[in-house]
Amino acid sequence: MVLLLLSANDLEARDIYVRLSQSGSYSVSTTSGTIAMTDGEGRLANLGDGAKITTAGNKASISGNSFFLPLRLSTPGYLKFNGRTYRGSFLITQKAGLLNVVDIEQYLYGVLPAEVGASWHTQALRAQAICARTYALKRSMSRSDRGYDVVDTDADQVYKGQGVETAKTNQAVQSTAGEIVTYGKEIADTYFHSDSGGHTANIKDVWGQAVPYLTGVPEVVNFKSPTATWNARISAAKIQSTVTKITGTDIGTIREIQVSEVDEGGRAVTMNFIGSRGSKTLRASQFRTAVDPRTLKSTMFTPSGGAFNVSNTTTPNGLVSRNAKSQQTASDGLTFEERQGIARMTAEGVFTTTELIDMLTNPAKQKNYYQTGVSRSGIKTNAKTNTQPQVKPKNKYGYTIEKSGNDFVFYGRGWGHGVGLCQWGAMAMAEQGWSAEKILEHYYPGTTIRRYK
Image 1: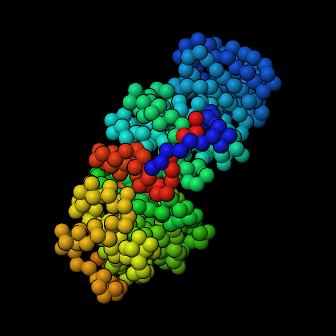
Image 2: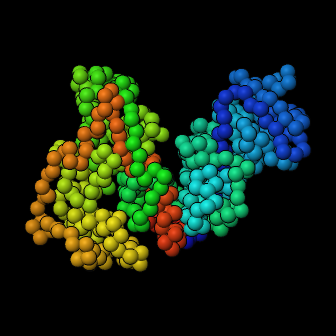
Image 3: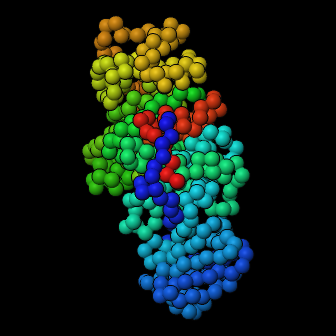
């Protein structure tokens, strides 16, 4: 990936406004010195080593005294709130609540340890730093109406302030200072997640809009995360209420759930919910988010804990794969079957790391590597006849979700929406010698890294 420079007119370094709370009651303190405060009318006040601030409307109350919002708080040390310490300053506004206003590089100091941790490989940390910096800047350009740039939870990216910083993660931020991912002249949307389950997702299948560099790619290095496999039991009643909430229609007691469409990696795209009074088809990602994304960790479902062979284009009855609708040859000369065969052989360790890197950097060689892999693994192919594969029974793959009493039991792989960079995949790639730049090029194909300061 080429590193280019943006002019100062293109993008300037700036503070990030992180919303920490919107409770209306805030107890703040300092690690040293005193807290200086300025209110919305320019009045100055010394809050000593701490104070409790409550807000109502456009005013704040502190020790019986009334002040106008917004309030700006600063200190020679670190500010403290809710058991955490923070660099920068605090800003309390009527619209957004308590914000930490902090330089973006210092903000990243509190992101990396919270998102991945100091034990991770340096190149994986560098990739995460570039990714997180880009994400925050992209959000800051579209949220002026909200009064903040990002929140401090995984609704954006986890941020825990100064108290979690480590020398190794800070160094990863410093070594990539100012570097962001761009697509053309635009800052890229660098979504990321914990574990893809073997193949990242096409953003169009998850959130509806198409983005050229977020179309989904197979993992190229084997890895096993804490959520490599999981299962979740969800009551039929909760699923019924979730479907009703999304659709505005009560289809009655849920009797059956079918995965009606999958993407090229085997991830569920749409699901059909059959109730006692009708049925509804929903986007799988929409259902996951609504029912509980921490319980239903991903939409990469597997049958009763087994594995769906995503390299084979055969699908259950009624199950449509977005990319298995034809055997047309792609621009790189690969048929769908060959592309999926490469993905499966990669997961099974058929290719060496050197070969995988060669395939990524030289796409024209992939067809030859496919044939090499076929020879090594003894895969049978129907490429000669160019016919559609035989459809297998649905229950062989488990795409009718298992029902147990009044509950449905989901089995799956990975954690997260699946779009963009896979953190555990990036870690595995780094351990195999991939640089941060090559990792980002894999997960965001067609993008470029630029330095803006």
